[in-house]
Length: 329
Length: 261
Image (cartoon, rainbow over all chains, first blue to last red; front, top):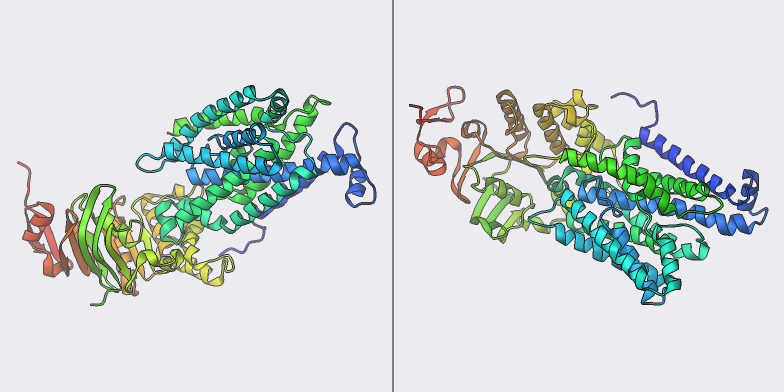
């Protein structure tokens, strides 16, 4: 066996992505209506200076970009593993839209407390994932069929969302529309503590199952005969994937395409077999942070919803991916 | 003849389609068992039930007297290894990475990659003759090479039982015989090998124990020399034939009597 002189590529990629996340975070803290120098930012972070703008406005937004991006990246990796298809990501197959339906229901019918928003989002995501699954099971399971049906369900649920908004009271409708593209505008710490805790637990659960998930890329038969409890693992993966998607949607609305693109970019960067979780999480964080910075800068001082940017960029990627998949099928 | 692995009165079905009814079978320990029969006779389905990929609708598949479905997943996977007919390689996987996947049942969150795993992977690659290919992407290999890589993965699992579903199907004749020799070697090292085979003459030459199936029933089982005659071949395959001794091994050799005009 050859002696390894260089550190493995996955470790290098992990380090570079982590550095990128910190760099983008610093940039996000500096950038705004008034530019703060990195030195100022650091003294605020270490508590030597006090700045409401940096500590209470920019920091939660930057943290949300990183954590939500990682959460979406992991959700995408989970569903792409489940469906064995790069198109099988929660935003494409309607889970974001379903979670948003749940959130709209909480806003319009219930009183719209954060707990209700979170619970209703998860419920909406689960209902849509169950519907997509049941509609796509026909004598066995096919990832591509699930994706195609998911795209159709996504369109229908999105239409339903528009209808709910149209029927809602004006103030609620305005709030809902501002949020419908997926946005980190105006998040503060009080919005984030519970979602961060939930995402932390979900990611820890999934990290413990990462190797089992990896093993499923050998196909169902070999996964089972090498010792994966497949039924239980699948259920867990769906719950974590929906949980990650819905938690982000409950706070920031349906931010599309991060979950679609991050796992594939992460996989190519890490040069690994299958779709690993860690590169997907880190890439997701970088993508969402980057998209959010672009969203703030593009028409400054007007901050666009980050979903507009991620959709515009991700849409091109989706078209490319679709043509590739159709050619393959 | 002792048998740790056995099927007791199992009925196998996919949905409404019954594949086998009340089938019983003992797999002799330490032997090479070959399962033969015409297409759709239920031989692959039987194999899937032995590795708990298909749960019998009735009856039990037992290992050491305990139903296989009741074992914790990893515990059974340390006893029984399986190679499906058309296994799926993850995108961009390298040979060594794929073989290492066979170590999954020996690992846990607290016991990640160990010396023991490293040795098992190296040993399995040497036994299957794929050491040279370690850093090659699996997708780039020929059919024969790829099949040996999959065997190496199954070997790395270090199970006393190795079950293979038509392992020779996509190989040319040379690679078929090389693979069968490898399986016989594994048997000599003490493993119990069970393979679904297409070619009755290869089965007769290499197997210690032959199981002939038709329509979900076991028509005959035993040493090839004891059970294979023209009547059995007629019963199982509907094929008129004469049986001659294999000029190399003296095992039964089936020579069909059908000929063109």
